[in-house]
Image 1: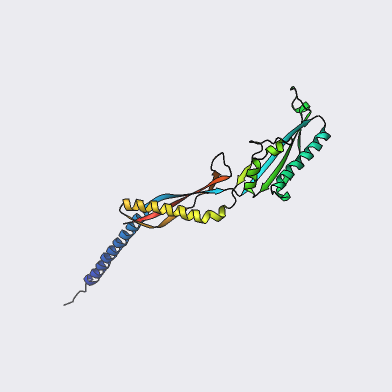
Image 2: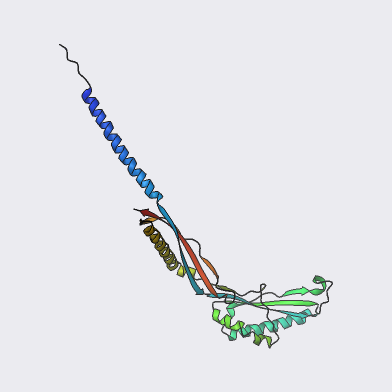
Length: 238
């Protein structure tokens, strides 16, 4: 009698392998889904750091106007008054290399201001500018301009000739400010994690943000407010 061979043994093995593969695949898929969900659990926070600093550089114009009918005489007057201003500045400790004199601006009132009654034929504007790191010296000089007035020099100011104070040492304070802003952001994130019964994980993404430098107020433009905001995304864990 002939005995026929069957593939039942091979089929059982194949079925076992398929079942094992499905189980392993399901486990891997489950882990992948958990990992994806963990990646979705993120808290986004911002950290602020502000610091008040004093300007370390100033550009200060000393501008005045002179009127007359004789241009040559006007130029001689301008030269004399410019020297008075320069001597005033040097006496306070401003170096000659920190002083510059712009070319005089001349207005012929008879042609440019036609139709009006002008006292003088010419109006000349002269500007002596100081660019220095001696901020305190300039602050003091601005309150002493009465000395120039006593010598017939009435300086003008305002939007046309503003004194500009600057803070140039931002790179020196950047690292410490970023550290403080990031620390503040983490403290906020930890509080959020605690409130949601989670644990704070690693940083997913962080953005430094831009530094801004503004006047503290309009009365003391030499005092500056430096500000930076960092944005940080943290993972949350169970």
